[in-house]
Image (tube, rainbow, N blue to C red):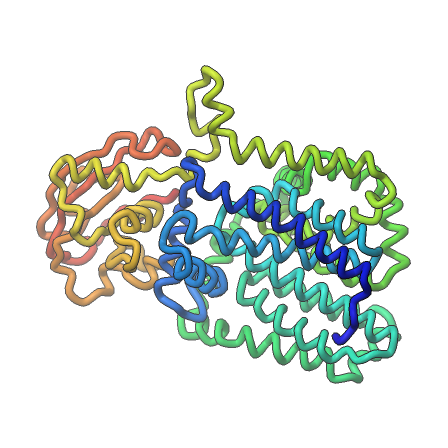
Length: 507
């Protein structure tokens, strides 16, 4: 790892950093727009960050750690929670650019940076605090180090430093999202495929990387063992493996979503140049090493889509692989490159400023024509409305729906974790609030509490409190759920869940 960069490499690196910084600054400024709010999952992760741990209900801890650092620097606000996860995508772009530069030269690095950093996936997720931000950062870093280790092995130079950092990055990727297990598996597959690669198992490097990655990840394994492996239960629940065994329509939808996440024109360019891409790939071992993990992940998640269902972002690292697959093609096709970047930037700018563009028309704003409504701040206006109706919003807030509990509590307290969650089905743990603060598992539950729900029970005794009083109703409280009202009850003296219970509200 002691390679001294040439003057051309230094200039190229400066150019990459300059381009990346300009795009990153633009996106950071976008976080100050009035229509950019916190999606309830982001508040959920923020609440995780208030309880530092090695694991949480459905995810490893990295996103909580990043948000903890982010908000400690810039405050518990929309900007404070989002800015650092957004910068993780800049890091992913830079590592991808470094891989491309090592493979095909300085210009290829610049092109790879621009392709990845303008994909619809990146353009969308840079404005949200998600687990994919950390996953792709450490995934791309690991891939770069792994390909450098392969290069060093081929040239007979010392590989230990590259394996060391690859192990650290892989461990951090595993602490970001469980799908990162595909990454070290892809390295193993790559190394065993050919005899000359298998020789590396006789060196300390791969073993060192594996031990380090497992050591970094092991605290999360211990955490899961102490919490009945709740993450496995959650993964099984969202996978819907008990549905129809074959669902080709879902697979086609999943493939189409990956196409759109990479970019419409980028997808066309990839398909039209598939033969050229395949030829380049089969003749370059380091190229294969760089993209194998993303392709294997696509195969795994695509199979899951066929057998049950899969969300589009579950294969997010595929975008890193597709970027590297398309980069050498666009090196010699400037018009295609311009078309790809122009379309991606047009989509990004339209999305970022869509509410402003929509306001220039006579269209009525609805959740169907304005996707930003889903992440708008409904909770501060709702709390203000309750206060105007004389509701005591200083009471501990409790709810049966995490999309209400998290945001409503955040509106009244930016520094504390919610105190109680109402969920009577003890056969399943629904989320982290249920896992940690189900009111049935707490000690003193005399209250009083402010119970917020979308469900107005016909029999108030169903709530399980000795005292239940409806204090106010906020009609159509969230434009994303326009048919729903928010009911505010003052409750006290929890008696336990009655035998026959509704199971709460699902989003």
